[in-house]
Image (cartoon, rainbow, N blue to C red; front, side, top):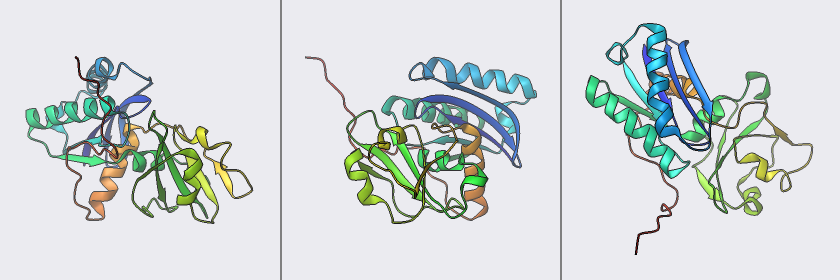
Length: 220
């Protein structure tokens, strides 16, 4: 199965073309802004590398959130456009699951994975996963000082671009920080979508997952 995956939900922008777990092409740029201008040229470059067209893929995938309001919509708008043009189905993946998928295999045993996504406000977005990437609860939003209330008394492996804000809050022998990049990667989006499909999970729809209302200032 071929999956074309996109991500622009947080502090990076990436594209991955994956077939049966094998990465055919991959592009990733760490960037706080500018994803709208970067995403489609990156995709065109990856498609040129493989000689494939969008119609050659079985599924189109993207992160649905939580994350940056604009970034989520950029990735979803691009994915929905590709689906409409090609007739291919959309499969979404949460940002937290994509980040958890980046934790290295040798870091996972015996750990509760704690994904921490930067919300660019007082709170952080978090979700817990087992070592085999099964969710251990719903996604939540909490200020750094309140984050500990959501965590179990087990060995913890933190990952995500927001985890640095917990350095002064979470300390001790049971707390570790993953070597994985803090941002989601489209490769993990593709692999996560494939795994969920194999397990019989229904696909997430192409709708943004927001944990709070967007901050918008209307013109006077």
